[in-house]
Length: 101
Image (cartoon, rainbow, N blue to C red; front, top):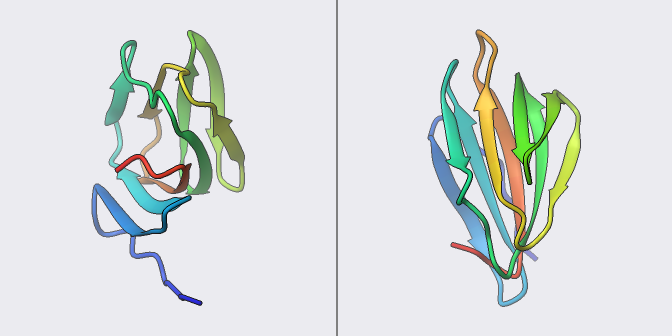
């Protein structure tokens, strides 16, 4: 067993990994974005939990609004971009299966 307390004072940080999964935190400042039209994880599903803040996710050219408390799944091979469109940091907890980073 392992226990973690996520720290959201970094842009992106892997918390830990096993052979089958991985956890990471991501923080986007107001106006920042990550990913893009060519960004995808070929072999890993990404579960993203929105801890705080708001934003927009573009997944395979479809936009969805991100709000605190939401959980989304970005399946392996789906292109994606995450953008913070609010005045507060967008803080997310991410899980990759299998590990991506």
